[in-house]
Image 1 (cartoon, rainbow, N blue to C red):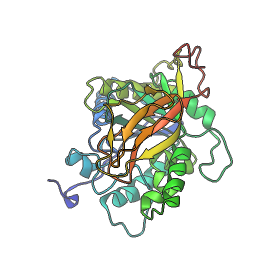
Image 2: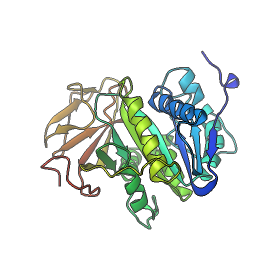
Image 3: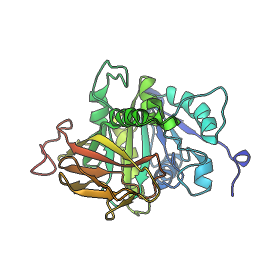
Length: 329
């Protein structure tokens, strides 16, 4: 098994002759999510061979953001890199060392595309940041630019509400007496949240299930569309998708015990009805949906005290030329 001392960090930058935006594209923030790595390396080959030109600005590719987790073919090295992402003067875990390298690199860019995949079956989707706001949790003023890019990545499903929902889960953990770092709202800060604190726009694209052979193609198309939309390449600007499904996360449910179980094999965006049983706790108590909605990120292997699944409702935030489903907006 690979040891941290044998690993290294790699970024590859291409700059055009004309001024323009500075984009960074990340793969394998989680080591078992290889679709972004495959797509990034494919695009790098196209640039190096002359089949794709960078005409303006610059693009930086990080094919493997977490080399320890990637070498071990697992989600994490010592911990989840996409939580509590911040530089530290006293790195302890390997992901702390990544953060000390990655955070300054992110700060040098204007836009981030972070490529991921997920546990269970389901369609690709984009995670959006907050709407414009001057609050204390995640102040932001570039939602229109971020949404415009999201609509051009080539997928039809859009989800927001991440950090608000995570913060509500933290408040519940604190009220229950939790004292671990997971009971800290800053633990919900990952690559995109950090990028927004540095003034940039940032999107997480979930390209499909980990082993879905189509997921690298979803990531590849998104990279090309992003380069074109931001004016970095000379390819035609991509059109906005003509149908959209918008959802907003509103609740996170933690797994309390390792014998907590789902009543069936849930996939992200399976519909749930008010009162429907989603899982059973160790003591036999059912976990039920509080309203009609959708289950998101169900993780049957979640560790006790960590996120088990999220719940989402339909949203009207993202507007394409028509909704994806007749009952959406």
